[in-house]
Image (cartoon, rainbow, N blue to C red; front, side, top):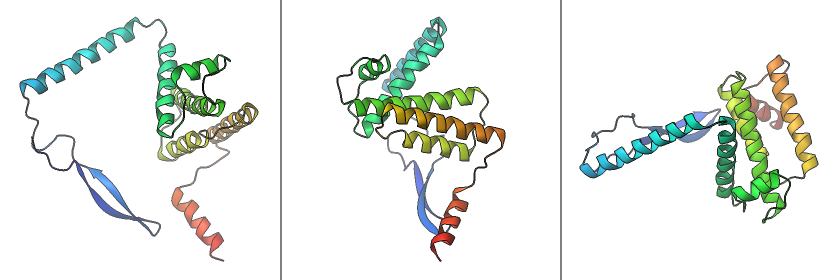
Length: 191
């Protein structure tokens, strides 16, 4: 089955900076999917697996435990992309104050990532609005926690993250757009 490209690149300009953006093709593929018997069988197997997962989720006595493990598995996999040498068992050993089998800095990095994800999920559950500026803030916090640190520094950073989020919620702090930030930087350094 031959398909066209699944989108295209367009040239854009933001605050005088030129870049390319990928614009995906519409969701319904063209040409339409050819449902061969082999493809239909794979689709049915996937649908059956989703049904099993759905039925298991109903049986879970505590969905927060499932989310706890899912967030940690995601943190381990995401951190592996960056070269971190930590497994799920290493992370769990670290969180339960046992000695992991890999460098402590690697496990700490994954733990920070998991903590940031958990914090973001908790905030969303509290009605934290999901807007572009806050998504950027969450992304920056995730990236910034991926640096190996000591526990005392982590505690200070966690408190700072919480303080900043509370200041945003109380209306004491205001987010500004990236365009405004770059404009301020240009003005400051063009003197």
